Image 1 (cartoon, rainbow, N blue to C red):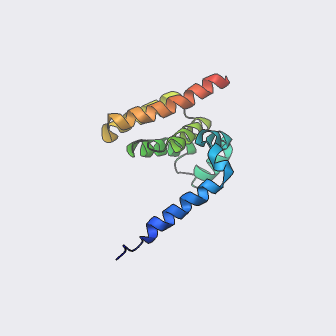
Image 2: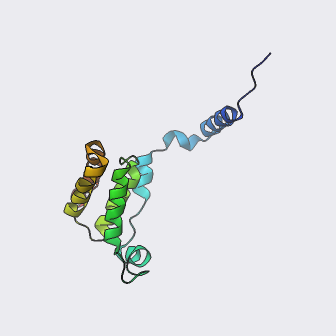
Image 3: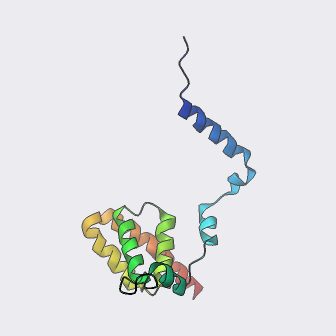
Length: 133
């Protein structure tokens, strides 16, 4: 008697074979893809995520600092998202000190490893900015 084929395993195997068929997938680099993503202009962030929608609410900078805090709480697991959020926070008017303090404050709840990882990712963005200057 033969074992039945697990449909999820078969689907996963098929997806792996399809991926191998795409020649560009060999050259795909998440870092290159991340570099292609632009940073939203400050005015647009303010209009969409800040006081443009809710005049008495949080501004875009504060919302982005809260997002950095949330990402740190999750352990700063998605490098690209953390770096992109730091870039947007800087564009929205946050300083490096604001970002560092936000991450440090979150360490009380998220732990030192999460804080260390988030600081490391934020530092990569800060280094980029210094290289551009």
